Amino acid sequence: MTAEEAKITVSVKYGGVEQTFSGSLEEVWAALNKFFSELIPAFQIAKALVLSVDMQKLVEDCKGLVGFADNMPHLLVPKEKLTDNETLALNLLAAH
Image (cartoon, rainbow, N blue to C red):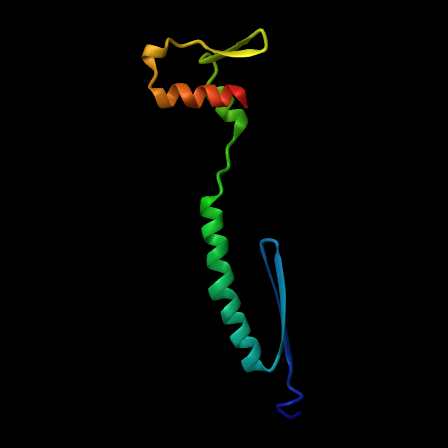
């Protein structure tokens, strides 16, 4: 087998990305290194930035703080006991 005939094919699946590299050993090695050095860190950064909220747990944690009457959310805690940020967060949660 000559070097020209020696082809290699490598398939990589990561997250929702699937990539196949074909060529000589050197070409595939370079392409794989580029794939891992460019794409994988981007996935790691994106994964770190994604906010995942367990809505069921959040609602359970806020039980007794927000109530609904006349199809409107109402705070059940006196505003004096909450910071502005807490009041805003509870109102946003109730509106969601």
